[in-house]
Image 1 (cartoon, rainbow, N blue to C red):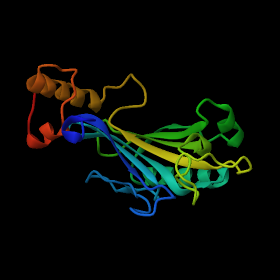
Image 2: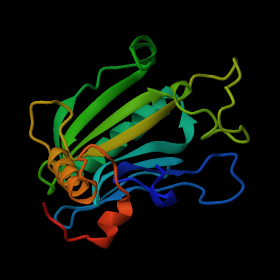
Image 3: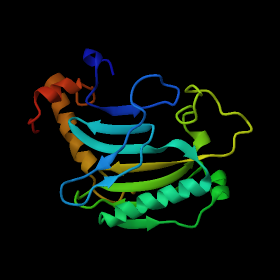
Image 4: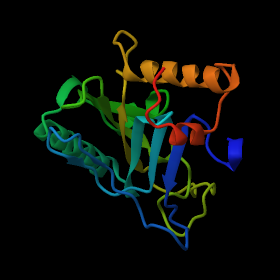
Length: 214
């Protein structure tokens, strides 16, 4: 950050609705639609992150739902989301349905990737559905009236969240991705504006020239 007091040409927009907030939205609902396939609408959650490269959205993630869940509830929500994706003709390319709370507790990151998808309609777009331990996320986003950053009481039962991520690249490195092409365009614009392809420039440069091509 820093250019024009605003955004640089590569970054992330965060939309957050902490439980302790006294103003602003109560939560966010992510709807994905490309115009060719049926939309996928996720449950409301307290955090959505949107990654951008120049004027292109390179990825989006949603942390769900409004309140952390028991393991059984989180698993049920993840499976419902997965069913919505398949109903919208998203192709499931990876599926690990055999997991429980103990498995999540014992793996690095305390999370389990339930499924990955090739998104219908948008060639080169992929999605994942993950169940993770709430205690590994930012405290305070769900259980009122706790403030952000305050640790959970020791006697709090283990709770879980569902994270859905949609990216312009595959989750492995062996597939060409859309993000690299966008980053190449951003480097070309930087070179044109500042003479240094590694130096970030204000996002406003792209807003002023939305049709620019390398």
